[in-house]
Image (cartoon, rainbow, N blue to C red; front, side):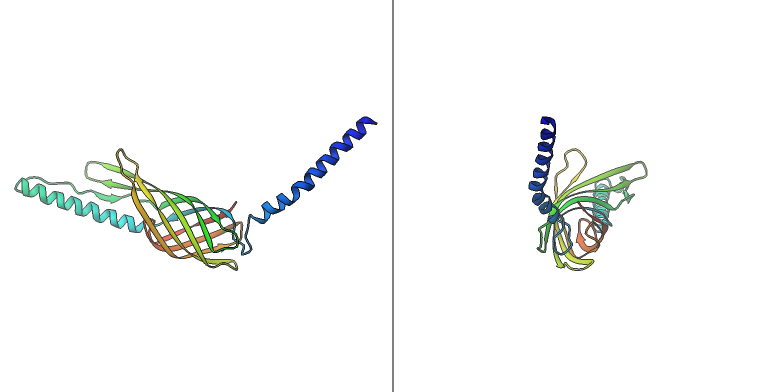
Length: 208
C-alpha cells in the first residue's frame, strides 16, 4: 500500500512539474520565430566572390613591384630586374556567422567569421596568402512578410593576414540589396553590395 502511494506521489510530482514548465516551454517555442516568419536565432553560411579585394590586391601588387623595379633599375643603371608575381589561386571568401533577429522588429545583428585565400606566383616560388575576417553583421528588413524577405546589410570588422607581425585591417561591406527566400527553418540568401566580401554573396540561412 505504501509503495503504491509512493509511486502515485512520484507520478503526481512529474505531472505537476510538467504543468509548471509548460508555459516556459511554450514561451521558448514562441521565441524561435517572430510574427513575420523570421527565425530569432539562425546560422548564416555564405560564399562571396571577393572580386573587389582581389582586384585591389592585384593593383597593389602590380604597382608595388613596378615601382620597385623602376627604383632598382635606376639605382643599378638597368642591370637589376625584379620578378613581378602574379595573383593566382584565389578562392571565394567563405563565411559563417550567428544571427539574432530582434522579434517583431526590422533588425538583426550577429558576429561573423570569414576566410579568404589567394596565391602570389613568381618564376621561382608560390606563396599562399591566408586572410581571416571577424565582423559584426547587421541587417534592416525592408519587406518582412511572405516567403521572400528583402533587407539591406552592413558589415563592420577587422581582417588579419595569417602571417607573423600582421596588423589588423579595418573592413567594411555594404549590401543595399539582400534577399531571404524560403521557410523559417531554411532559406536561400543572396546579397549585392560592395566591400571586402566583393559584389555577390550567396548562401543559406538556417533557423536554430
